[in-house]
Length: 247
Image 1 (cartoon, rainbow, N blue to C red):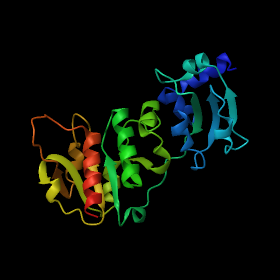
Image 2 (tube, helix red, strand yellow):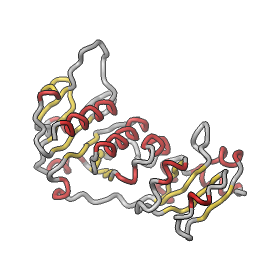
Image 3 (tube, one colour):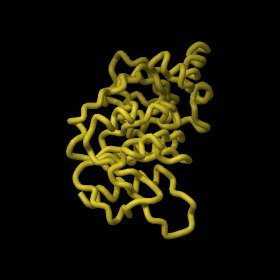
């Protein structure tokens, strides 16, 4: 059973202000949730509709576990079709970024991306290609938005997202910055070397004016058809793939 007060509290976590107030966020689905077990994230509670006890045996005894009905789960889920399990997890502190930790490899920098699905897909892509850090502007969509978390498909525990002032961030690093632009060097002819930052801009506005001067190498993905633009998450995938292909 789940009380009315629990339902109200969990539903409040669908909103950013309450996630920030309580320091908690929601993960749905056994597959995604399983990636958080033993990851360093602190799990507060789990609500499930089936007998998942064997699959939850590795959880700390401090985790509160509730068996609920499908109807009850639908009242607290952010999904149109709930996935049998909803977990509440504590939001960790925004990690500090040390310039020395960025050397010798590549990282993604995001400037003002607003679509939760795009951010979630970029996180999943970063995980696939082994990118450890994603540095985000402070106006980028919140990573603990339920739609972002869902779109990561369990990759979130393995990728560190850091929200910071990008102007100050770029001032503190000497890594080359490869900016994704419509006019630039072809990505297929770009020498990425062995380290750098991949800068991706807002879905509609692109990279903000204040960051344009920080770009070391402007890079474009050549267009061979007639599409007006390329989705930013798709662009991220192409950049990550091309960098790994040449590394």
